[in-house]
Image 1 (cartoon, rainbow, N blue to C red):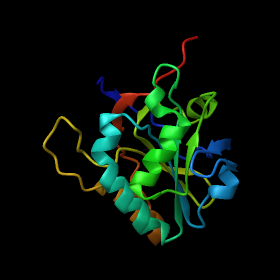
Image 2: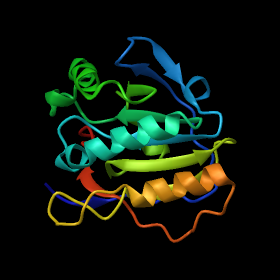
Image 3: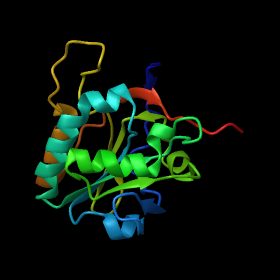
Image 4: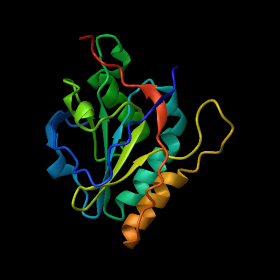
Length: 187
């Protein structure tokens, strides 16, 4: 597993819109339909990435806590399913069912255009947008990875979400996420 850092979308960037297939419902969903009243977290994840699986419990806990506060969580997988069939939509649906469907949606970005629009590079790649859909945080969940002994706390993401809800400034000193690279289709 090659450790790939996120590209760090510029703060203030408006969230690119999308209309993607929701693997949990079979219907198409847009950003406008899924956004939260107080904020929106967009996460690029996939089924097989050890970095995603390592932080799974924290992602679920954070989503369950903050969705009650008006922040919605949208997961997107953009991996090439021809080369990585374990990331196919039917497997995505199974994974969300086993996780207890903690997110507003788990969307499949077949064309990979949405990952490119967000400048996503790895899984997990996490973005927080305010109620106007301007990027206020992008980066890591916390310092834990599958290869270190740092405890999982979700402190970086939790801190950004707490400040967003409290109307406080979010520090611009943000650390990139590290994970598996998005599995791009061959050109």
